[in-house]
Length: 298
Image 1 (cartoon, rainbow, N blue to C red):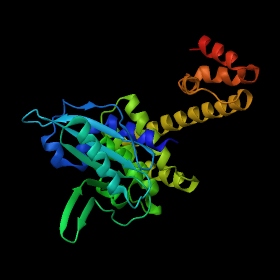
Image 2 (cartoon, one colour; image 1 turned 30 degrees about the vertical axis):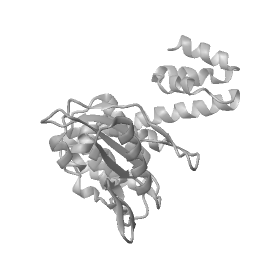
Image 3 (cartoon, rainbow, N blue to C red; image 1 turned 135 degrees about the vertical axis):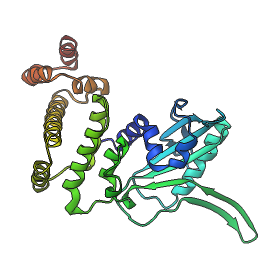
Image 4 (tube, rainbow, N blue to C red; image 1 turned 120 degrees about the vertical axis):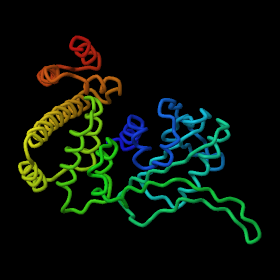
């Protein structure tokens, strides 16, 4: 699983909903119809020689004046002792690049530690306070999923899977996510994105799945039928994805590395085409054979 990719995709797809859920003060003056996602910025640390890529940068506007500003969202999936310093460096580079006010947001998505992480970077001397840089911090492992279960926000339906969850509540969280998805108008692609996110971070074991099914059975109709139908759709989609991943592994053993664009074509195959590839996989002897097969079954 590509953690960075799935997080960025979720936040970009539901950017306005993300701001509304966690930063209502910002949402109050954000113009929702004037948001432009900018190309990823890659910065080089001239001293250390390392390269760093900013996660999500959006050019936005104030609702009342139309004046522009930048929102920078950085997802951090592991605890780093000097993270605040890095956030300041990104801020300074973005300020220099665009010459606009920058609103910095850190999403801390790791499971541990649970201690509250700082939201400030300070440089000071005994006789001089040089810098006090503040940034917004959303630390998911310190948020209780129960506080979000009754909202109608697609970001909540996904990010509950990364919040603080007691072991005994895992099945309840999965069901809460499903029920929320049914309350929110989503298209197929949006549902698939949330499903992938939840499957990645809240995969139930056999006992938890049995508990989930029991809790679903206790729901009132028609919600019960709707949850069951979505669960079945979810399971079938997961099985299809698993079959495609297995076929990719077989092809890699036979042919060596599979180019990303070819792997992407395989992942997009219909169920019938996936079955056909499973039957033909051992007759494919070269990269050219595979490309010809995909061209004829596209």
